Image (cartoon, rainbow, N blue to C red):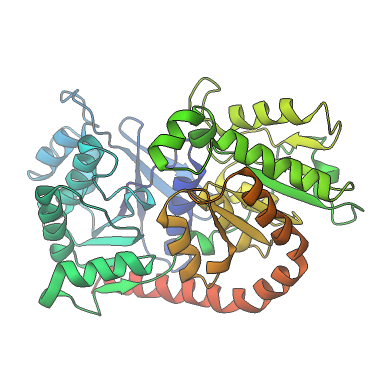
Length: 415
C-alpha cells in the first residue's frame, strides 16, 4: 500500500483535491499501488476514483482519542501493528507514506495546531520506520526556532523532499547544509499541472452555451476567493493587501465587462463550503454577481454544482481568459492552455508560476489597489491570444517535466 497524507479529498477545497487527484492519478498510471489516501471520514472505505479504486482511511487531528481515526491514536497504535484501528493497520502495512502538506501547510504561519498536525503525520511515517516522501510543496516559513529545528529534523530524515518553488529550495539547501543531497532533495513543479480533465455530468443548463466551442462571444472566468472577500477588512490586515479584496475583485470584474461589451463573465468557485462559511467561494461569487447584475444584466453567471477538481479543469480549459486568487484554480487554467492571470496574496503564487515559466502572469494583491489591478487585468485580457500562443509553446515541456517528476517519485518509493 502507498498512502497519501495531507491531501484529503473531502475538505471542499478543490486546490487540495487537485493535489490529491494529481498524485493518485499519476501513481495509478504507473501501476504503483495499491493506493490509499487519508480523509476526514471514519474507518477504511473503498472509492472508485475513475482511474483506480483507492482506499480512504479516516485520519483527523482532534482530541477524541478513543476514536480510531484520531491522529494521535493512530500514531500510537501503528507502532504495535494497528490494534483495533483500521487506519493504524493500513498505515503500519504501507510500503511508503507520501505527504503533500496541503501544498503549503508545512509551516508555523497558520498557528501551532496546524503545525503540530503537519509534524505528527510525518512522524507517523518516521516513527514506524516507513519511507517518507514529501511531494512537491512550499516549505515554511518556520518563525519559531523550536518549530524550525523540528521541521529540519523531519526534512533530513525523509527519504525524499520535493519542493515547487525556488525560495523553498533555497531554504532546503540552507537548512540541511552538508546533509543536502541533490538526489533526495529536488526542485520540481506543482503536481496539479498534470491533473486530468473530466467532463462534468451536472453542468448547469444556462452555462452550457457559454462553454460551447461554437459560441460567438468570449467568456472570461474569475475566481472570487471567499477567504479574501467574505471578511475583507480582516483579510486586508492579515495578508497585507493593498486594498479590501471586495473592492479589488469588483474593479477586475467591471474592467472586463466594460472593456469588451460582448464578453460574458463566469464566476468559478474553487472552495466548496456551506454558504455561511467565511471561506466559501460560492457565497463570495453570489455576492459579486448581485453587485454586477444591475449594470450588466445577463452577462454574469456563477458556476454552481459540486464539481471536483478534474471537472473544474474541464470548464477552465474552455474559457477565453481566467484570473483568480485561488492558486490551483489558476494552475488548472494555464495548464489547460487558457490565458491566465494569477492574483497573488502571498509569495506562494509568484514562486509556483515562476517555476512554470509564467512569472510575468501574476498580479500581487499586496501591491495593487483597485485601479492599478484593473489596469493590469486590462492588459492581460487584451494580450490573451499572445499568451495562448506562449502557453501552446511551453505546455509540452511543462507536461514532460511533470511526468518525469512523477517517474522519479515512483522510483524513490522503492529506492
